[in-house]
Amino acid sequence: KGKTAGEIAQFYMEAFFKDLSLLSIEKPSVVCKATDHIDDMIKLISRIEKNGFTYASGGNLYFDVAKFPDYGRLAMLRLEDLKAGARVKIDEKKKSPHDFVLWFTKSKFGHQSMMWDSPWGRGYPGWHIECSAMSMKYLGDHFDIHCGGIDHIPVHHTNEIAQAEAATGEKWVNYWLHGEFLVLAKEKMAKSAGNFLTVSTLIDRGYDPLDYRYFCLGAHYRSQLQFSFEALYSAKNGRTGLMERVARIREEAENTGAGGISDTDDKAIAYLKSFEANISQDINVPKALADLWNLVKDASVKAASKYSVILAMDKVLGLQLGTAQIKKISLSKEISDLIDEREKARKNKDYKLADEIRNILKERGIIVEDTPQGVKWRKI
Image (cartoon, rainbow, N blue to C red):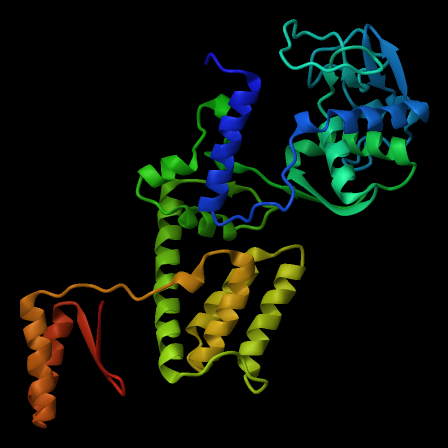
């Protein structure tokens, strides 16, 4: 590409955050770059070394897994059951095939463009230390939740735990949330497999990025989700229908002049409590989405209360339901004349003619409703 590693990283970082915005994903309050935290990594490695969990070999500094008795507990692995060389080529410099590098000065990559000075020589950090160092810098030596894909469990997260707890001597993370794969025809979606799709791909095919978000909300994060354009099309229709319903609820709420949820709106409050309970139970988004749909369809809940609860739910779902509006559709002169003719018949109390015109309009895909605010119409 004729660009530096930093320029390439910047390009993809900007593309990544652009996609996050399109998908209605909030940007983190702290966005940290590994290359800005080399000193933090060196400090963490020094703590691990001081506690006796390292050894130097062939110019690199390794973590000695044998000195960490709980190694593999996250993945429920036993060292004696792990096969050497099953994942990567065996490194002859290691005491054990399960040991991992904390700091490289020599590796299979002979022309590294990004290297830093350290107590162990000029080089660069291992593949795992950056994550522990940055999370500990901003969240402390002990924090609640660490996320990642399920493929991180046996190696990356297992090694993160080992190095963090070797440094502190205490438990590092309370809860681990691992997302399952998005799959295509039972294969993991991956760039290397040539089946990698981007948000831009979906937009080019006529989909709103929020159609994809709605599609993802239909599966629990610990369940595999199989992607197909047929499934995405169904999600698009589902989201479109939801937005149309919410738009009508919003209009009704605004026309009644009421706002918010009162203490007497027991049904509305019950829907919100059920939603919160499902979200709190291991982030069960599919059930929470069902709560939203049940509320939207419940004609016994006042529009104002219903709309307030919808907005509260959407703080989690992120479907931008507050932007839902009834689409203004232009009518042909013929249809407009029929609506005017029906209104004149109603004013002249010729209800038979008014009903006949209403039926004609319905046959042509237009529903006409008489409301206290005047005549309303919509397409079927």
